[in-house]
Image 1 (cartoon, rainbow, N blue to C red):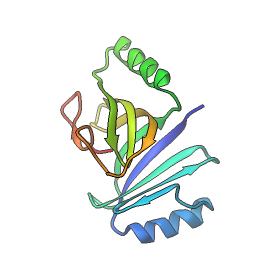
Image 2 (cartoon, one colour):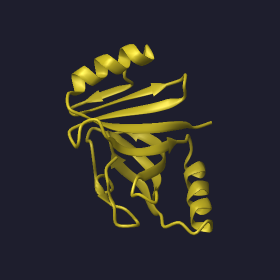
Image 3 (cartoon, rainbow, N blue to C red):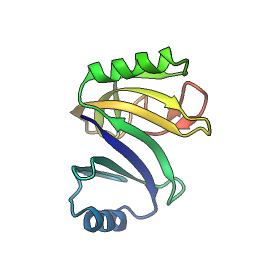
Length: 140
């Protein structure tokens, strides 16, 4: 099983948390400075709120999976289909240690397939907010 990830840029994190808590009738799974996420069961969604950027826009999209094997299989699938990928193993991003593979859509929208390995005390590491396989800037 997996769930779609939608990462949004927001101007006011507290206001966004209040709105999405009411909208999805759920509380955030994680809240850190400038960052929050919701792990929603119905519909299966990982909603990520990132304070800053261009408010009201999509930061990036993704699919959260639940094992490194699923990330590895997705990376192999993307390469077999001829898509440029960027693989990150045990990278710290968005207050979590993750294995992930990135690919950019035709208009530069970044997509990640990732698994959370552990919580982290910091927002980012070398793999967060970097340049993708196709040269686009992406942030986790």
